[in-house]
Length: 211
Length: 109
Length: 100
Image (tube, rainbow over all chains, first blue to last red; front, side):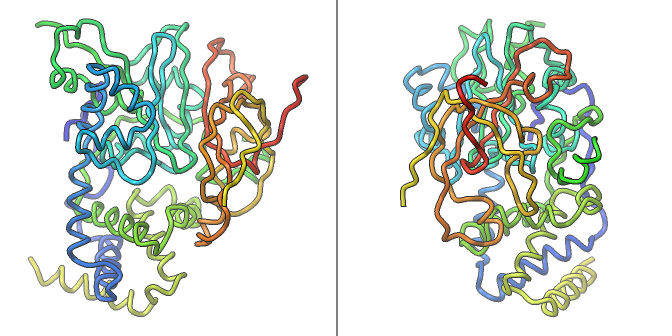
């Protein structure tokens, strides 16, 4: 999965990947084995759910944004009901309602979950580790400009930043502004400009400079 | 943090507290992490447990575990505690199942 | 069961300065502070019930409430009028008179 960020450093990997078989890994297998043995879940359900998890990537959110940029009626429907708009494109956005918060020339939106790490996982896939970190969750509500600057995003003073703290069973995605210089691009090329971080609000779409 | 705030502010409730720079870390999820996620989705979908029970279980792990465990380690710890509370699984069978999982792993080089 | 929401968009509210034990979804940093109702999300199951497996209790109105960052952290020198929106249950809110 492409990281889609504007970070200067390569991603680090704090969680265990190829390490030894940890106690928590054994616990995970044990819980799954017992749930299967008791018929609480079936092997088929487990396989299908794992497929669903793998299918959700930020490309889904990017498709919604690109379609909204190209089709004003779709944009209206997306702002009214993200889950229904996603279904139009054959995307299952899950049972938890998602709300699109739209950037304007005067407003920039950012999402966070200060209490745990709620994230529109059914639409964007797994949340990056930094989104779940103590630093991001603690600081972005109080000093959003400083945090965004760490992501390389400096916003002018006249742009209000609104931080959305996901404290109820509602998830958020940012509908970013279509970037200048993208006028001639087709929908698919537009979608490629919309990285995961653009959908969280820690980045904005940019048209790459001609090299 | 003021003394009164330290008493009533829970460990997971960190919005607005000072913290260091946001390190741009991320990693591709390992199969066991996806398995934890899948277990939770199925249990919530079937009404065996709620998302807020998962959250309560994580909050009840306490400050030490909250900071020391990896994200999905917190999840499976909470899930297994909630399933024990509800009587969906029992301590002894979980002990045996962990032993069996380890033995299976050791048998496959 | 339908629950009639007590507040409407545009109304000013204050978040209760409660600090109960148990599972709570009202962040500490908004407690005791004034905000404005942005939107009624509608009746939703109360997370304070769901956290203990009680899925049969009546739903509660939930609102999107907008706070000015300067209201939350007046000691911060930044001049920008940035805002935070949190989603809060009705029983955590109390009305603010037009004068305050």
